[in-house]
Image (cartoon, rainbow, N blue to C red; front, side):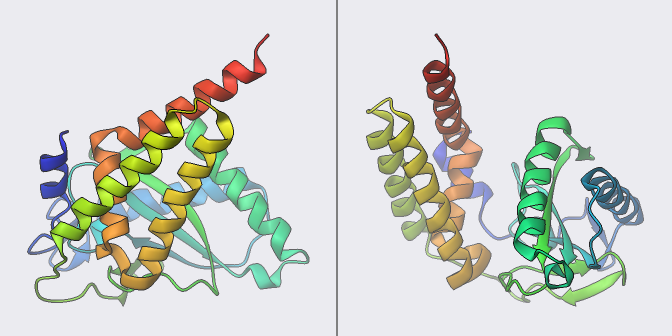
Length: 230
């Protein structure tokens, strides 16, 4: 996908996706499938957690869905109830990486991304949050026509590209890892500040849809493999 098409694809839509929603509610086949996925993830985790809720959120829970969007499945847990909350959080992060390596799950052609969310986290409010346990919204997506400054997104795409270009020229693991962490950190800051429609988040999604982010990560992996080989 070229940049122009990618930018067009992240523009806010007039409503929720008909493929995922019907009459304002999550389609039963999606709800049931996501529930099974959450259960399977927890079974493989093999860690006793106090699960507070299972939330469907992200682009498809709002109006920024499009080609390349995921179905974001968040398992909300109370890490504070653990004897070692930090160890439990680390275990969940490792489990997410392992899950992504071993599973490639799609619902009607849409990839599913699983994330363990701490009860004390403050997720962005620019998108909706649908509770699978309550079968209802806990946070409805904003009404009306959400908007953003497309020129800022284009500038941020250029910024991210320059960060990758400069690091890639070194062909070294350190600069490349620093560049990818910097981009991820900037995206996170944008989400915390302006939510799903932040220029950082939309630029990140544009580069993901053009394949440039994956190409950058592939370069990181190639460099690491080369350094470890003899």
